[in-house]
Length: 439
Length: 122
Image (tube, rainbow over all chains, first blue to last red; front, side):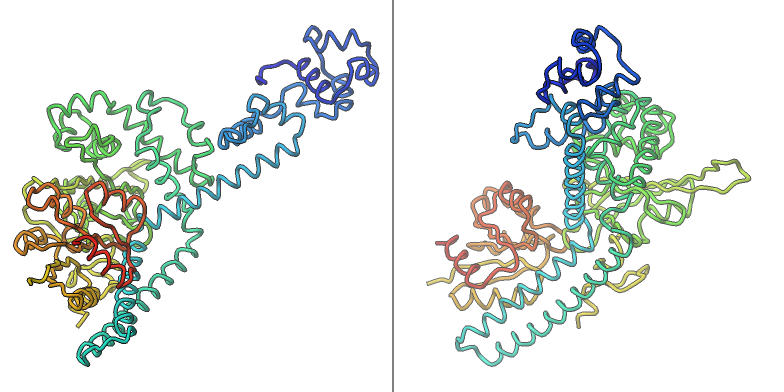
């Protein structure tokens, strides 16, 4: 039933739904059947005491008869039905359901929302397992140790005639790997414990927003089409950030996105990129700040990027805390704790307004080489007498196989999972045995 | 009779030792290599009958190495058994798309790796 139906039609639907004859309802309400007939066909306005009497006789809320069931409840029922199409729930009767059985409708709505919330938690945990560099590296270490222990112990246990020298070697290997397994597991447990105490690690507001943006491939089509569009429905949609803090951060992120799209519309950027692809030259040619160009390039889908290679983007505030993370395959960005101090991002923080360019090689397995450039800016949002607000932005692009190799600065994601053995900027030991520590 | 040759590209020394032991006892000649960047050159030089390739290697991913192997006529049909600690469907799908012969997730058993090697170089 459409939400625009009139009160009379709702009364009629309710009456029929309850198996009441028009005459019976009219009698119960102290009016003539012909008058009720006029009301039910929307030929008489209804309100006040009569509406209350009719509602009471029908066992419905007067407001539901006059205004329809609350739209949020109806929309939630409709969304729930849409999520499980195999149930063949009558979506066109969602409003009727909300109106006639409000308690059951609220129960369905509550269960649907809870199911969605749990699905989002699972998505975040799954995403975290996949993309959190510490977890990924720790799991690799654990599984490698387990594999080595399993193989060596099976060799020793199968009763074959093994030379004493090999027996000793496999015993030593099992000892070493069990030690390594214990260390990696301990590190993992500490990390997970720390994550838990950081306030439901999987639901950190910034993480919520990043997962939400990543699901849109970091592009907000509605703002590309119209930077002045209302983003509230987008953020408030069932798949939007679940927490108030997440929604607040989403508003801030989309406000900046809209400002950028207004300053540098997609069409203008595409046109310029036919001639220029180098970010600083784009900024000069288009007369926009370099950080704006970085953000606009990072919002481009891979198909629109030169060679189909997308840009990654990382930002930090004046404290060095990461405030935006669009990682690239091979360039992991830590979600917890501090990042590698050698990133050009932090050098840009030390030299405001100066463009820092550096080719970086991410250490460890699956080493990737990236062209990075960074810029930082100082703003005085409340005037020059107020505090200076600093932000730095770093744009990343994977080096293509055919590109000039050239020297690259060895960097990591964060010290705990970095495999550079003698890094002068190391803050803390790696969880992995490095060549000079392994003996 | 010349022993058939396996090139094991893996950077975990104790896994290398165990696999080398298992396969050697079965009559295979096992060469090893631990660096991703120079793995392709090692494969071309040693011309093995089968490559056991770890995914997460220092300096270059096993996926990249497999990609290059399949683009080279000389190694296009070379059996490649891929080992990885990441056994998600997307990892397996990527390996299959790139032309892996067999994909095995860690931890695997000795008998699994032995029977797979025998099967791939039948």
